[in-house]
Image (cartoon, rainbow, N blue to C red; front, side):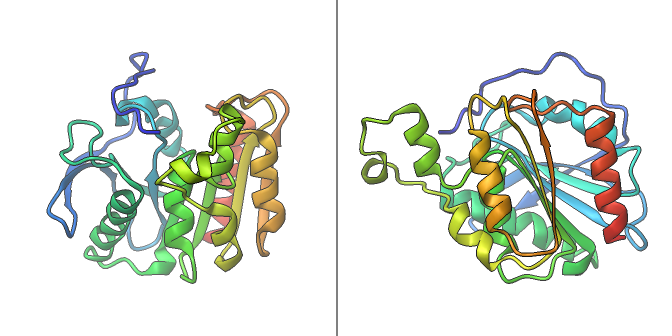
Length: 238
């Protein structure tokens, strides 16, 4: 499930100014974070939870577009990723996500100042933390219904529900989320089937927005259309 050493980084140059920060979890694991501070007082801050593969560098192509948006951001690397100590697990990643939000709150931010952004596996942590909370908004990129159903897509004849320890039940938790939501997914996704993202969107409470495309695979293309959707969503929250 977790592939910290998988790398699809092609040498993109980071075009947005970041500060490397250390975020310590309650179980004393230090996490690497990249923090971009534009205007904490007047702009929302995205906390970005990445997917199940690779280092923070693999997301540079996305972060470079954030410089065009009126937003601050913090992206963290999970335990066991990007040189961090620890072993990834569902419980551990929830703790990592909570620690990132606590770190932001220690800067004086409130729930309503924070936008949670989950990518793929990161949508599992994003939905967990957004339940019954008053964050400014939630962005889910290529979300799955549950890790059990995602695994069944690859191993239909194996009782994955009995074997899989980390289940990330997004379809149960989405019902307890009552903040503005943006769901993004491509129909050509070969890893998390498009129907899962569509189902999460259909189950979600209002207000909700979608960006569904025909040709995007699992790693969605950050083209003008997607960036415009993000800008509009963030502006509506500001």
